[in-house]
Length: 268
Image (cartoon, rainbow, N blue to C red; front, side, top):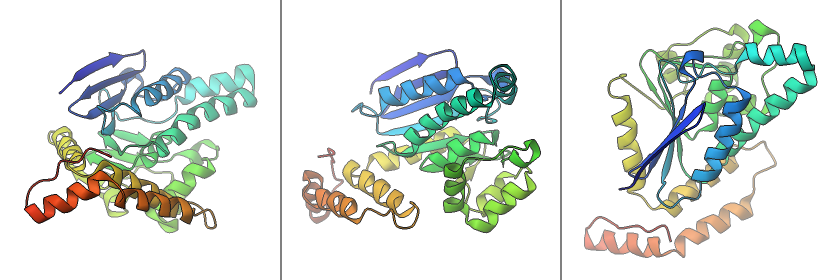
């Protein structure tokens, strides 16, 4: 299998065995997001999305934090120097790659170890799944700062944990433990720090064994159901489902089942 590693100022990524490991690389700042990191993340997503040697994208953080959200000191300085409009522009730049992650063509996993706070939780919610290490903490401190969390991110939180838990997270602005996050459905799985990377690697291997077209169809159809009421695109879902039944992978899946062997899917 091919292995490749690349590093920028604030983002590093490695492609190995079909997995793109993308790391926030500001450990001295708890991997808080800066304008530079946001721009680099957009470029990395652009580069990796359609590569045939990438089946799953995993987001990680260097050091002892996943990401503690926005670099608020930097954004507040920008507000004072250039006004609220400049800060809102910087926020839209950040949200741009979050939206890109949300609609990414391939499965995405947030591998969380440490702080997952504020905008960091927004990124985690933009991923398809969240797998966390014991000791990780979660929260949205917007109410402690007098700012408002974006409506899109709020909607994703409601879709994942429901209205009551979403209100608890916003109203209290406190930090939640990995156990609390798991119990409310904020994270899919919790494991030890030592086992985290291998656990995620094994999950990626499970995904890779399956028909890529079916996985992609499931991702897009589920996302359609998560849209606001009235925006569900039934025609799109029907087209995606029909594409699966017309694929070579469906023929291979039937043949493998009848022959009692492991299928060899090609994504076609």
